[in-house]
Image (cartoon, rainbow, N blue to C red; front, side, top):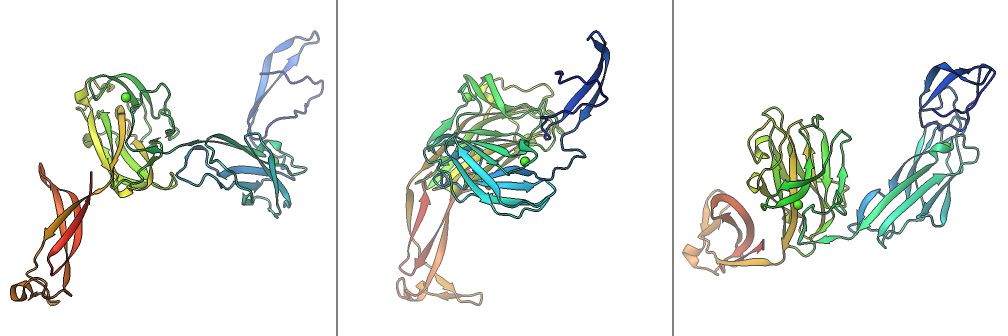
Length: 418
Ligand SMILES: [Ca+2]
Ligand SMILES: [Ca+2]
């Protein structure tokens, strides 16, 4: 408590408080000799303007663009719009609201929103002048209103901090060995609970040596269904005909009822929207060791597993991947050695295929080759699908290609290299 004044009356006017914040006020008696009384009476003033509505108040609620945090050249960085959500939190309609922005402490760009903006209404205002982040580096954008007679200056300014990183090109590996966490150009999107992704050091690693890795303490984290996300840098898969991501994972369940999940999502539009990668493991399928009620730390390389996600769907694109821990108060989850790779080029398979005949449209077959021989009816075509299977797991199809075959009998199938 800081003393703010004395009064011989039964009231005291406090000025200069921020209506967005809460304050405790404490009152105690002063003795005639100037000593403070030993008893005090405190009251709490909650955030807000209480019973003191403001005739004129513009509020900047949020900045919709540019985004804060990590950006990359997967998007247009040279002409980023500046868009801010204005709100009238006063009692009177407002017109001609001055709005301004200033990038990295440089020149002020000032414009006016004509309005009217009625009490309680909001308006998404976009400046006609864009900002240019193409030079890369860190950017601090201050956006603020300067409405004359605004009676609450504490809600007039917002600041958006962003950092632009280059694209990472394949092959690229993040081994989490750096001191800082998350790694450069990675980010953490916390669910807001007590725990989220963090760094673990001195862990027996997947290759048999001590490693530093990413982990989340689900053992202590009781926040069921919370999704904490560890987001990678932007990886360019340009020129690749196939791509994949591998990573090492270690996990133990606490019990059948208390076990967590890991989902991996992919974004090909700079993180605006996310698609399932096909990887979603929980409980036993995620576990790399037996169930244990003790806090889990990998004890050896054998307690890690290398998992692979096929990213060929996004070959040619810029992708961001996020590891989503879905909490269920289970046990610790560890990640290490996140590796993006890809290949360029295709393998060609030429087959001579002779059709016995073609479908006659009514469930039967019109014989072609048996009667007339290959090449006798070039207007007849059909397609053939070739499936490549894993020789060690013959029911697992690893690639599929389709080619059109005519009565010359030649079919060419193209498979992306992996
Ligand atoms: Ca204001
Ligand atoms: Ca490591």
